[in-house]
Image (cartoon, rainbow, N blue to C red; front, top):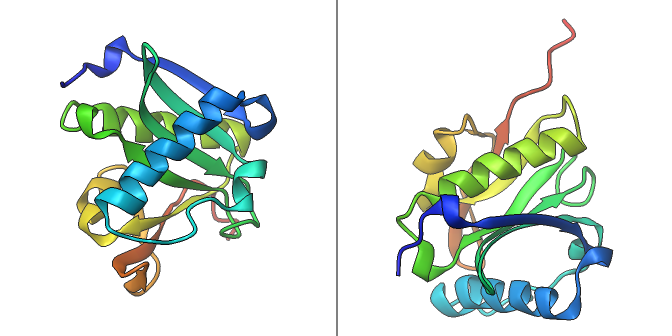
Amino acid sequence: MTAEPTKMTWTTKTFDQLDVPTLYDILAARQDVFIVEQHCPFHEIDRIDLYCHHLMAWTGNDLAAYARIVPPGLRFNEPSIGRILTSSDFRSSGLGRELLHRAIDLTQQLFPGQNICLSGQLYLDKFYREFGFQPVSQIYLEDDIPHQDMILYLKRSTS
């Protein structure tokens, strides 16, 4: 099943606005992608979720894509985008690109003028660079998957 991103219903909620079925769908999707598909047993649920904005794309009752916007100081000094995923049924449809565009826009609305960080899996380096993200760390292993910290520079230099 490949769905067109234009047929998606997009929602953004804070943690306190999430109802139990929606939270369940988010956690199930994250578990499917980050633990089962990637064979990474790790503590996927963290307390950072409590402080984030959760960006979701739905088709009917199915969560097709998800990302969380993390305020500055919780993961990085800058605001960041994390837990970026497209459910397997919706990959190769352009939905991942639309998700990242929307996540960047939302982060800019919430934290105007600030740079945006993410911890990107190395195999997605080219994808993130297409949006202007640049590596700012050495490659490191996180849950046995090569990652690198990346930043999208939006803040104007004061020099």
